[in-house]
Image 1 (cartoon, helix red, strand yellow):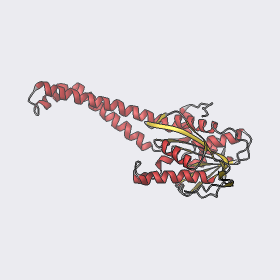
Image 2 (spheres, one colour):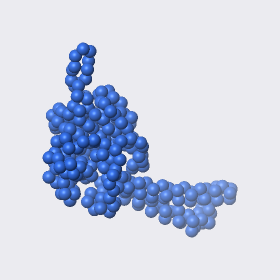
Image 3 (cartoon, helix red, strand yellow):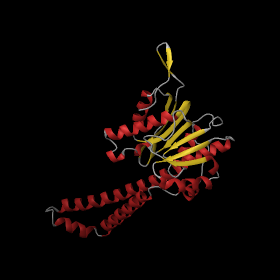
Image 4 (cartoon, helix red, strand yellow):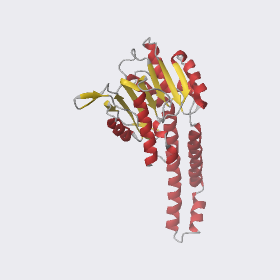
Length: 290
């Protein structure tokens, strides 16, 4: 799989793109600070806490162990929460940017790309990476960013203008389960840390959620031109995606090494849509719809 050949200071990334789901980071930091304070209180007032436990436990040894164990648990919890917050902060910005560069690098020839699609483009990190690559190659192509909600469209276009690629970018609202584009429309289809969020109202591990995710994959394949390339980076459900792509007879399916993102395993998957499918003595085009 292609690797990133460019890097950027994290302050620049956050200055342009900000942070989605900043509430999660605040939640993690608040609880990390709370448990840090709690563990400090255990350290400073250990004897008082020990005597408190003695009112419930008859054995002094058991009370001392309970007080010490509680203090250790709160300290470990604080460390884990700070680590989780740091990983979330890194994943949402610098790692996302780096993976976007790798995804762009996994497409061999951008000079022939006229239309690309970013499914669930969010703040536009991947969208603008694609647009930047089109600009570098002198292409007249464009990249369309699709979001389920109109809410982020203006901010996404603003980041494109800040990156100097506004003329290469179009944003629109649409249902990712039924993409508002015709069959065989795009040369390249990409998506970053988005597909796993589809169907989350059913619970991530339910059959219904899995069906929703595979429907999105089917739609990505449907709008991809024969011979076109698809690349997605996502969390948790990559084996499920690979099976679906195999069922759809995709070619050159490649899976990257695992990358820890948002405290879980993530992978990048690339594939190519074949031009046609041979069945018996004749050639019949596949129906890519789910």
